[in-house]
Amino acid sequence: MEGIMSNSGEVQNVFVLLAYLVKQCWATAAQRKGRELAGMMKRRKVDILCVQETRWKGSKAHSIGAGFKLFYYGVDSKRNGVGVVLKEEFVRNVLEVKRVSDRVMSLKLEIEGVMLNVVSGYAPQIGCELEEKERFWSELDEVMESIPTGERVVIGADFNGHVGEGNTGDEEVMGKFGVKERKLEGQMVVDFAKKMDMAVVNNYFQKREEHRVTYKSGGRSTQVDYILCIRGSERD
Image (cartoon, rainbow, N blue to C red; front, side):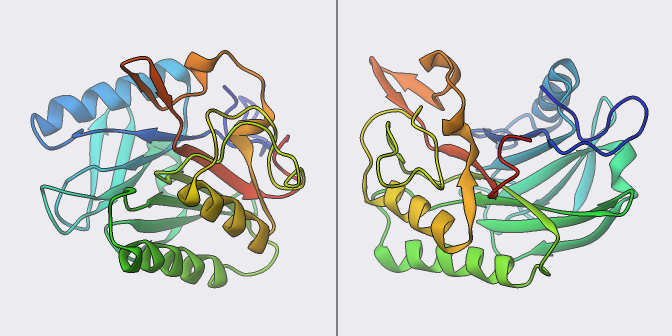
């Protein structure tokens, strides 16, 4: 994994952004789970992590151990919730925290003159009402439209949809190394990427299926976590 900054302190063109679905991470044994997450980030040398379904009520920031701090937002301890975890050394670089809803939030950082916007999102599940899904995409649009041109943007989200395997007709926004067939929710991700001139980063890299899927159950593989960035920087 690549880090945001090298040992020499130079800003890299690649950003470690792992959209990591943390199911019930803080629903029980919050401190222990937080430490486990921080330990995982330290082992894998992840500097920035987007988390979803945190189920932690409130709009605060807490240290979770191992030199990491969680910025989060949630309105119900039983559902939803999003957050962004930062390595402590980058906390002083945070210029703005925008908590839009318990499904969308963003952080703006300045690192050696480079403006980086990190967006964490959690899309409604397939069975949710269309109105709720449209509200999520509207909130994501709102965040994107508020970001000045020229600033870097990375979205790490659980989109609850498959963009699918292959990329015929969508080569400009995604690679071909996905999982399963595309459904309506996955098409919404692709449409959003096209509208915002972004790319679905995950699918550009050929990896074993177990390294691509979000989770696997009963022999069925699911990939719903994706990283999106402005086109042209997906291979940086």
